[in-house]
Structures are given as C-alpha cells and as structure tokens.
Figure (cartoon, helix red, strand yellow):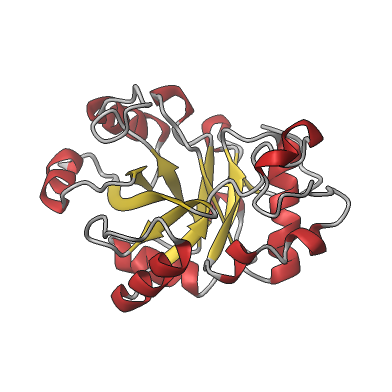
Amino acid sequence: MTKQAGSYFTVDLHLHTNRGSSDSNLAPKDLVDRGRAIGIGAVCITEHDNMWDSREMAAMAGDSGIVFLRGMEVTTDMGHVGAFGLERYVGGIYKLAELRRVIDLEGGILIANHPFRYKLDPRFSFINPDSEPIDPAYPDRAAKLRIFELVDAIEVLNGACGEDENVFALKVARHLGIAEVAGSDSHSAGSVGCVTTLLEGPIKDERELIDAIRSRRCRAGRGLLKSALAPFEPTQSAS
C-alpha cells in the first residue's frame, strides 16, 4: 500500500455506545457529532455480544456524511473477537470455533481484538490462554496461539492498549502475514478516531468493508485527530 497518508479512507473499526454496551458512556448523538467534527470516513459500532438493528443505524447516520457500519465484539473462549457479517447474536458463538463456522456461512470476517492486552506483563500471565507468560522477544511463538488460526485479521492498534501491546500485535501480524486493522475501542466521545483503519478507497457498506479487509487492502494508522495521519509502524512514536 503506497498511497500518501492523506488519501486514505479512515474507519474506526471498534467502538461501543451506551445504547448497547453497559460499560460505555458514548451516546449515539455524541458519536455522530464527534465523527462529523473529526472528519472520519466511517465508524463501526461493535457492541458487546449484541448488534444494532440496521434500520436504527441508518436513522442515526442521517445526513451526517459518515458511513455507519454494524459489527459485534463477541466474548469468546479465546478472547474478544470482532465479527462483521452477522445479523444477530447466535447461540454457541462464545466458542470461537463455532463463531468461525457461523461467520463462514454468512461470508463475514473475524478480527482478534486487542489480543495482547495485559499479556506482556508477567504479573498477569495467569490470564493467558496458554497458561504461560508471553515473551515479548518472541512474536513468532505468540503467533502459534490458536486464536490466530481462526481469524481473518488482527487489531494491531487499539486505542486503549499500551504501545508495547500494540507493537507486539503488529509484529505477530507481520509474522503471520495477516490483515492489520485498528480501532479506538472507544467508550466515550473524546477517543473516537484516536486510531483508525486505513483503506485504499471509500466504502459504503459492511460488505465492502469485509472485502477490503479480506483482501488486505487495509492497514492500521493514527494521527487523524492531529491532521497528521500515518500508517502504524513499530518505530513510530505515540500520537
């Protein structure tokens, strides 16, 4: 992907509103206002284990000029996974293998959200799915985790993660050759768009988003809020 930074179409792939996530204080109206103010191309509302009705989503978008897309952050036995292409929560998808089966039937995609949050700190190693500490010096070992066999992309840049966690996720994605995306994980208006997924061109619906990520016509970026949009690289300082 060789475009100039300013020519990307920006998408906040991961955020929560108080309409569907009990831990969020982001009101839908504030999301619309914030999206318009920062000039973002699209936002994906990914509530915890539930989805917006498509008609409600269209009504909220109105004439804002922003593309509003539906997704869902599913709590699975292998961590939080962003799902695009579903119409509703389906029983049994808390098991990632079942979620993979269901999403394939719908032609959708799965994203490993913030896969290394807290997992690089040995004080929290007990929460790792492999019951062993993840060594930051060996992304190739972490790439063998089962979750990465069942997803189409990795959220390598999460607005609520530490820089070390994001950089490590990027290194794992590069080792695997898997699609790289970003999401603010916002639960309040101020952080919407703090990081974004960068697409080669505009999209108008979830199907076009799915196709762009599946074909790896995407990457993670940040700097939108400072009018200094740039792809995310391990040597890049926080912005």
